[in-house]
Image 1: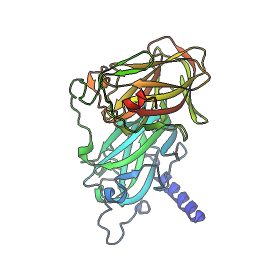
Image 2: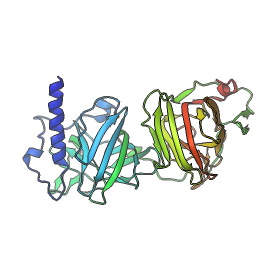
Image 3: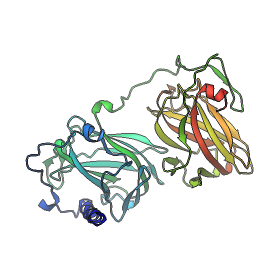
Image 4: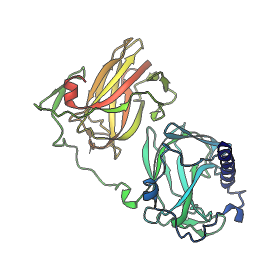
Length: 404
């Protein structure tokens, strides 16, 4: 069985390398096309067969192929692709999967982030069972700096191939996905992290419309927070909800990102995350991680267990980002992390603070929080040293009052 898998893996890589040759040199013939099985009219329903996921990297979906300048690998539950001077010659990486029907769901939702010295553009092509490629008007997205973001690639009206000849791509029999970074443009080096790739409907694309002015929702409580992070709620009977584990660092740390890989270096240290800082602060350099949606109406307090082994204290700020990309920066929540040889629990209370002031005034959706963003000495004196993070949880007001 292992021998057969190795043969499949080698054949898949060879096919992938051939598919990603330069547009100037690539030659396609009938050997590059996969015939539809006799009697097959269309691919399977993607929502029925795999809940819409092409790959979530949590279970084996197939072998991802790359090339000399593009190396994809699955690490934990994340795909990490290393690129070295790739782009101008249309180098890419991809996956072949059982054919699916995308007529009712012509959109790919991809959760991704990057590490590199410049911002890359990610283009995504789809191929049908005949090998026809959506390269006439390939959907693309310019990735954002920082943590994971959701990107939507809409193929509506784009089922066309222009090279090497004009063809109509069949959305009913899609069986290949190809990723390009800066296709045909300046070469790029860095890493692309992909959390999942999912087929969704057009209605799933977030509408670009103004949100209502910031306001405290009826479910939020009025609080005062002391400098030590202690909350005094005005609600007499706060309800208890189970604590939500955001990260206990028992596994890998690939979901964590650094907004400045030169000044903030994140490494795993036993069952902790070690963050090394080199003169950060005035520029509001940040780091953080994304996670599945958490309802912070029920658990509005973040408990962070951290150790500061540096020679000076650090003002550690925490912001939360919602499903629409709005961030709790109107009323910064900060704790002074004192130097200590031991881990200490610090509490970040966001009750009544789900508001954004920059770049525009918005209400942050506290029921759908997807990311946390840390900053050290933001706008203050530069800080150098190390912080160790051992445990991060979202907890209820009652649990905070009981110090659980």
